[in-house]
Length: 603
Image 1: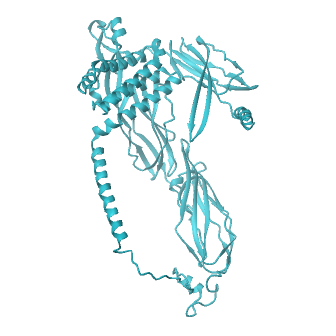
Image 2: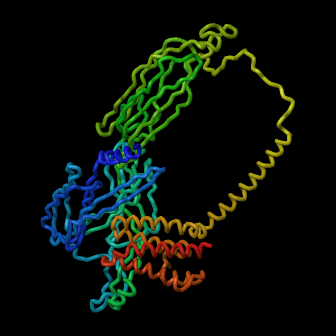
Image 3: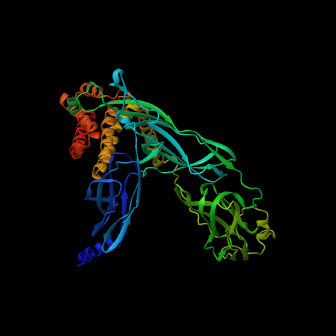
């Protein structure tokens, strides 16, 4: 009965959750390009009202597909079902296309997604991934060509003029018109800035227009920069080394060669860099209050549950919480003025910060440990905190309320304010500024023993164990350092792990019906595994070299050829949409062949 009750409650809880209805579509396409618009809802729909597609050709749709995913985290299982309505569209004329909002009904409630604005561009130079240098007579040659603007690196900032301490968001974005792989990067040093790096893992690739051309864009890095000095500061370029993959249409290549041998892909290396960006940093206005210590942003201050009474000679804590947005990691603890008979100790800080593209949000909590030495009634003064608000361009001061505190007499020691030693009172001791603890006169309860641990059998046994542990740790660390210094060995050991991570990424693209992402990850997994496992530099990573290295390591010619064939099929399918239905077969074959090679080479 209990199980039936739980099962009956679960559906109601699921429907009580918020329903999500979104639309996925490119923001810019080329004239004649075929693209997809997907409407995704995470609950079973009762009905779908399609938008009116005007000024654009509908080639297919709506096609309804269902996908399910199950995840188990810390023993908790969650299941998600997504329903996707897909349209295949084509824009045949240049201009802006407005697609109205679509709506879906779930359990009698209506949800909308959109509207969309898609820009159709007329690109005259064709696909950059299929261009070749013309030879004499107008025939294509066998040499790959990469236009200067096929790969562009840009640095974009949200503000060019800020105050000292006000954050600037800089985004490094890679624009590409050809498939490519990243080799290495040189990041800027950010002289004159304090830097907080943002997480860009969740940023999906986008399509954007730049100078009348369509690019696939990827966010390489995004940082929050807090200028530490006034004047003109320069954000240095970010440099990338990339390897572009260009599909060649050679005059010697026939249709039969394309079918059996796959496309002819040539690699072109290029180093791209963003342009330096200049930021004008204004100094903070003069006349800052004495309670200002460099905080810039928008903050609030509160005293958290101060105690009403404490016992003399016992410790207590005052807690201040500073909340808001700004340069929180650099904010200093506000000063608390306590009476002379109170002892203050080092401030402890805890924080909860959220780094976002809009800035750093959260709070910092300051704990002020103290000891009241003399009994009495006290009023602790209000705490002031001043910050500069760049939005209002003024200094603002926030403060807490005064705190009334009763200090009770300490019954465990000599009376609170009477004379103690030589006529000196506790007040006099505090005024001297010395940390004196009063002596307890009761029985210390000490015990006499005839045995000493030093020079005993247990003592020498402990020394021997420590020496053995030290020798073992030394040998282990020496071997670990030797292995880490051997970069070839490290890359070989990690090759299988890296390949599995890329296979998982390919599987996610396959489940999400994204052939383009699937084949890119499959090729990264297959090529990357060979380069790491066989120690083949990227410049020499060809099918012939891979086959030769496999044969040298005792791999059969049939297995080596099978590996090369899978790479060729993935490269061909990447540019032949008609064969994308074989993703499951290629995925299974790739995982199987890498596992087989790992079992042989990894021994």
